[in-house]
Image 1 (cartoon, rainbow, N blue to C red):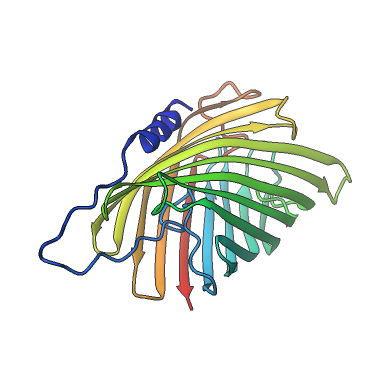
Image 2: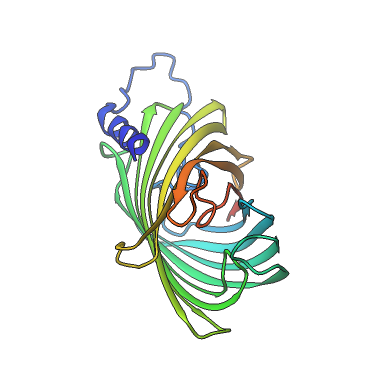
Length: 292
C-alpha cells in the first residue's frame, strides 16, 4: 500500500511537461499510447472512433509452496472504439493446468475452454489535455473452469478498476496507477456448493522509452484476498514486483511482456512466508496485438 501511495502522489505532484520552442522545426515524436504499454497495469488511452484491434495473450501463474503447479490462461480478444472515449473488448479464454502434490488442490493435467468476458473502458480525462489521464474500466466475466484449481465450476464475476496515468518526462517516462476491486461467485459443479471471494488491490509502474518504440520499466502490485464479496473475511495478502517491456513493431503490430514475483505476503491459515494459498510465487503476462 505504501509503495503505491507514494507512486500515486508522484503522479499527482509532477507537473505536466513544458512545451519548448523548437527553432529547428523537427518532426514531432509519435504519440505514445498507454493502453497496453504497462504489463499488469492498464493505461487510460482509448484510441480513435472506428479503431479496431485483435489481441492475443497468455497469462502464466507458477509455483505454490509444495508440489508442482502451473496454470496457463491463453486469451483471444477483439477491441473496438464505437464512440469517443469508449473502448469495448470481447474476449474468449482457455486454460491449461498441470498440478501435482499441491496442498488443497487435486492433481490435474488438462486443457479446456475457460470462458468469456466483455470489457468496457470509459476515459474521463485525456492525459494530453488534462493534468492526468483518468478512466473507469468494468469487465464482467463468466468461467466454466476455476482459474486456480482447474476444477469444473460456474463462475461469475466483474473486474472493476480506476485507471490513472501521467507523462512525467515528455516522450520518455510515463507513470501509471490502478485501483482494482474484483468480486467473484463460484459454484462447484461437483458438489453444488457456492464460494464467494474478492480481491482488492493497488498497482503502479513506471515505463521508460529507451529508444523509439521500445519501452522498459518496472511495476509493483499489492493485492488483498477476501473470502467474501463484502471484504469482511480477510484471507491473505501479497506484494508482487517485477520488470516489464513493450515494443511497437510497426504501425500495426505491438507486443508486451511482464514478469511479477511475490516478494512479501502472508495467508491467514498458513504461518509460512508469502501467501502461496491465495496467490502464486510467480506470475507472467505476454500480449501481442494487431491494429486494423
